[in-house]
Image (cartoon, rainbow, N blue to C red):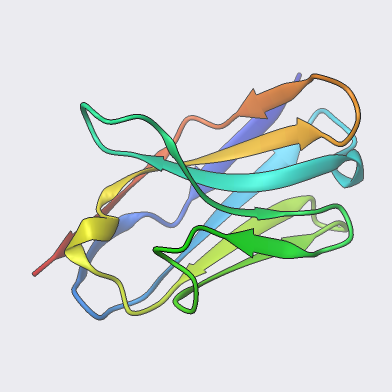
Length: 117
């Protein structure tokens, strides 16, 4: 059974930090590109950061320099370290796994991040 379980969301003041975790199970983690996405009600889900199987990251322009994505292929977990948070970062954050070759992907259930001004 495939599972992506996010944790670490919450309420933080502007300028603060949070670390999100996504624990994966039920599939071969090392064969998947992992990503973090976010969605605000009424808006489309948008890419925040992705990390390749070998650990190469890419970031949305809006978070570059503030967020860091990491993966642990032993613990089957992907992290998103979020620093210098802004109210505009408020959203539900979702973890996604994309197979590196096949058209196969999975979503987590999401975790709420709220940044107060």
